[in-house]
Each structure stands twice: as structure tokens, then as C-alpha cells.
Amino acid sequence: SQTIHQWPATLVQPVGSPLSLECTVEGTSNPNLYWYRQAAGRGLQLLFYSVGIGQISSEVPQNLSASRPQDRQFILSSKKLLLSDSGFYLCAWSVWTSGSFHEQYFGPGTRLTVT
Amino acid sequence: DQQVKQNSPSLSVQEGRISILNCDYTNSMFDYFLWYKKYPAEGPTFLISISSIKDKNEDGRFTVFLNKSAKHLSLHIVPSQPGDSAVYFCAASAANSGGGADGLTFGKGTHLIIQP
Image 1: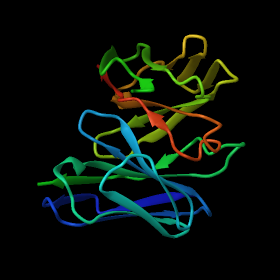
Image 2: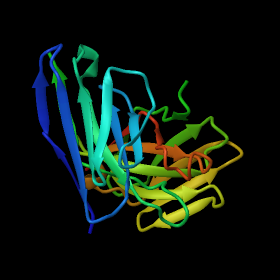
Image 3: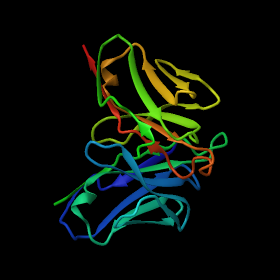
């Protein structure tokens, strides 16, 4: 069965510090991978998605970046965090099923607090 | 501009009764809809989905209804149980977005509270 891991679970970082969040998926090959953010009182906002190694698409302008160095690894980074980067970050995966990628499965999330 | 709207931030239902969560969308290109359940400090869990070629999909206690002309869908939970207390997110995708490859659009969620 497939599993998805995210770490760390929680993180407190000062403004201006760098960020690296990691996500790995097990039990599947060539998944689509996604980073979402849930800010306080808001829904889930898609940040990045990747359909393959080295292929990254960004949905919103921001000071975050993403990379996919391996098939089942997805990394979210920032060179300098802002207060507005605080939130709950979620990684998700999907595979081609019945003619679509629609159903996505989420990891446990990382709670980031920028102080 | 919010393309998927859940207008009720919270809903309180008595245990054993039916819970009805509503969702509206504005993008006519959406053709696949999903419901997720989320507990605090956890990732969302996929519950049930429906394609736009259907108007109803049922899985155990969960049923999703889709009204394409009204651009409205609802999730029915019956009977409601204490473990159903969580935040429920409605999500949508479009086939022309790479078959859904480029992600889901989520509503803001409805916090369902099941009272004993």
C-alpha cells in the first residue's frame, strides 16, 4: 500500500531564515506530487505541483520554491521566510486512475510558525 | 475569486441524525468533485467523489449529490456519529487541466460538530 511521509511535523522559524520541508511517497511509481498550504481560517491553497522529476509548476507567486530531485521526493524551500508564510503545509500525491489524476492523498502535514 | 464555496463555516447535528454539507462552484469547467475530511493537525482524508456524468454516488453512510445546473453539490452523512466531527472540504478539478494532474481547488471547509 502507498504511504506518504512529511517532516518535520512542526517547525518554528524566525523571519528571514531559510526553510526546507520534505515529502516522500512509498509504494507507487511516477506519482504526481503537490504542495498545498492551509492558512488560519482558510481552505487549502495549491502552491506547486509536479508531474515528474525536475518538473515543477507554480500556482501562486510567492517566496517559496519546490524541487523534485527523485521520483518520489518533493521538497518545499524558501531562502527567507516571511511572517505570512506561517501555515499548515500539506504534501499530496495522485496517480493515473480510471482516466484521471483527480483523487489525491495527503500526508500528515507540517505546522510552520514564522516568528 | 473563490471558485469553490462552502458558505457554512460550521454545522451542528445531533448524533443519529442526517448531516448535510453543501458546496457551490462557479467554474463550469469543473467535472470532478471530491469531499475530504480533516481532523486538527492532520492531513485531509479522501471520503468520496463524483464525476459530472453522475448525479449521485453512495458509499456506506456517505452520499454525494451533484446538481450541475445549479452548480451545487452536497454530502449527506446518515446516521451521523461522534467520529464524524471534523472539518469537511469540498474540492473540484477539471478534465482539461491535464486530467486533474494540476491539482484541486478547495473550498474553505465546514466544521461539522456531532452532538451526543
